[in-house]
Length: 465
Ligand code: TRP
Image (cartoon, rainbow, N blue to C red; front, side, top):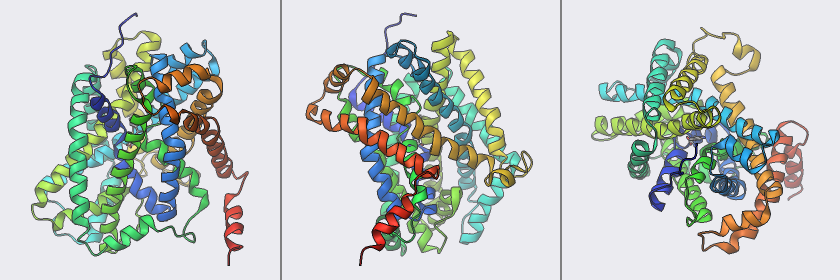
């Protein structure tokens, strides 16, 4: 198929579309609860450090490979490496991660849809905090309801991908990304008036060494990859639609900053509520659903605000889920020349079926012994497998490829084309060649128990007076 490849309409359009796919449930739902479970301050700092030192450089690397390769994830590696099986499997790993993420992503977004309905019904109006939290627990343990919403959300995603994504979703992504920022900002301003704001600020920005577990460093790395949508070929694909005069390094930087900004806004809002109502920051993956209704119930015009918020929650999830499904669909279309419609339906059905155990994981009806064997539910197992292992490993391979195997002159040319930040090349290249791979490998060794940063760091700190 020798088609002329499409390109993004405008630079701003591209930034908002890429940011729209990256800003999703990771920012609104995952960031706050992972921070809450991992002790706050120091974890946030490490997360930010990973974004700057490893995340953004790998992000730029993906865009560069994408613009050079002009294909989908597996195809890019096939064309750049003369069909090398090793590198193609990196593409496959990315495709597999997207599929796995989608299977639980739609469960979470489905809970969001349920909360739209609850907001319209004013179901949690005036209830005390424990009751609001309990409603979420009831939802998770109601298999049929969760399954219904999981199905509804998968169907919605399929409906958008089915006719092709560009015209509809790109347009909507722009609008929704901006609206989301405004709403988050307003909510965050309101949460400043709550008693718990000071504590929330302290919790997020004050590094407390005693609370911190170094073993969760890999989680911070995984989280930074998850929120930046790295390691799954989406940025490779988006890069392939970029024009040669577009500024890759600047784009990477801007999108990174947007994501950090959105994450911190949602973190501040949620933890202000947590501390105001005396909830526990370690609320787990239901944190956002257990806290925000409490804020909404206090606001004048709560019906409007909470409904709008959860609709936006679903839509930001949708702009991301569409990209997740598109990675898989585009890959199969490319490789096997399948028609889009058939591929979309097949992938959608696959995502739905594979998501069933995640949707039912709070109910003990399917894989009832899973938690006893793996220590966590099916949902949590897949979530952790992807974010903690697959994304960092795929990112590692992309960094190694760009830094070591890819032609350096080509790389420089691609980096410099269209940017006024050419001087950054050496710093970026150093990061992709050394900091990112070494950092990721260290973190993986730590997680695998081969290296113990905990003891090393503690011995460093305990030698202080
Ligand atoms: N970054 C998205 C979020 O924060 C989730 C995500 C991960 C994603 N990988 C992706 C979205 C790939 C689209 C494509 O929610």
